[in-house]
Image (cartoon, rainbow, N blue to C red; front, side):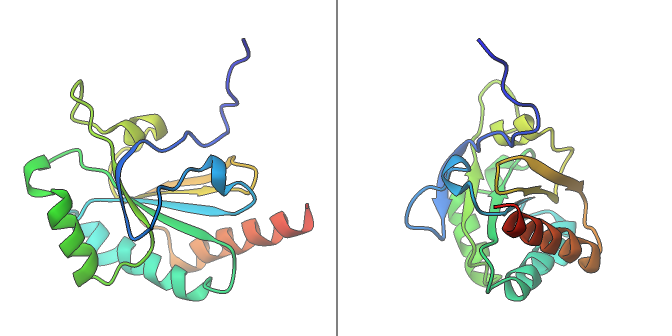
Length: 162
């Protein structure tokens, strides 16, 4: 039995999807560049910096095939961040990209996808190439110009290599 490729992005473990008619799977998104954005609605850095940045990225890269996906990954204050609260939050902050709720695990306060990716907290982001490999991971918020350049390079190199 062969070991999985360590550079491949682990599949998401999501209990509920919002802002999408059907669940999203990374495997099904091969051939697209994916930006996975892990956040919590009670995370000050997420609300003040990373969510507005994701919205700017959505506008700048709207004409490309970049797939932005939010991951609401709750590792603290579990009772306060219910799916009902998240739905209201998405509406109030006008978040329109698909958002998955990271699957809770009764064995740990850390949700499944957060553990799979080794996120240290929120906000975190992962840029995934068309071949499903992880191109870059960030804990915190990078400068817009740096993030935009990474995304543009992933989109451009993917187009020329096909």
